[in-house]
Length: 126
Image 1: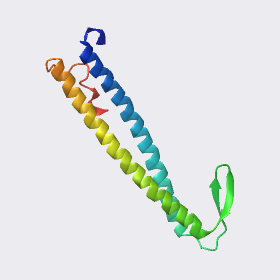
Image 2: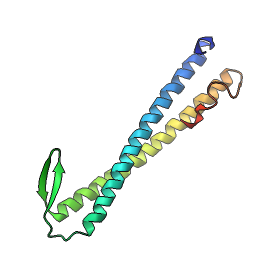
Image 3: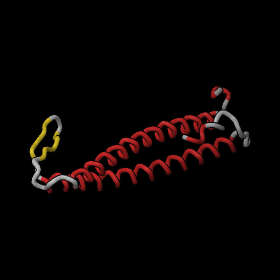
Image 4: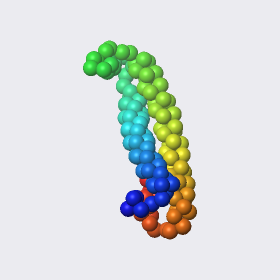
């Protein structure tokens, strides 16, 4: 079907496909960051229920290293802060990609004479 399109339209279709792939990658990264954020927040809540004198260990790669309560708490808070910023950044990136996608889709529809419901009709949810 793309072989019947003018070169400019074909280029727009390829850009749309690239943006859709980028949107999927950003969404996957955001999902991963949100999952890690939730796990870290849960760990911090659990830590608050633990006696400060309890012997604790922190995972560093494949190792468990003894740590103290305050270090564990500070590390979790820092991780949470960092992940909140990461999720917010990914949300903004996701919005930008969606706006670019919609703009390209409109340009392509105009280029093709405003033919609505064509091959791109269902791709708006990317």
